[in-house]
Image (cartoon, rainbow, N blue to C red; front, side, top):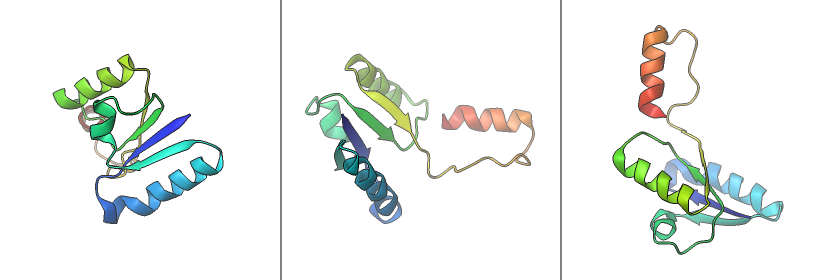
Length: 103
């Protein structure tokens, strides 16, 4: 299996993504780590699991996700900037609106 870890901002993401990469590689997974997105979109890699930063519903992102699905990739997402939502974060309406924007 292949795992693709996109690294956007080195200072903020490198250590956590490196930990995921090392743990995955130790279990026999082929890990591709760095600015892999342009190569994925151009079909340079075999299908595998893509760990995305976020999946906001922008037209460009939706196009990417459709491409990945059509080409048998599995897409997962870990939005490091959002973190966990606290129960006290606004009302139900605000939470739902926030979640729709981010996911």
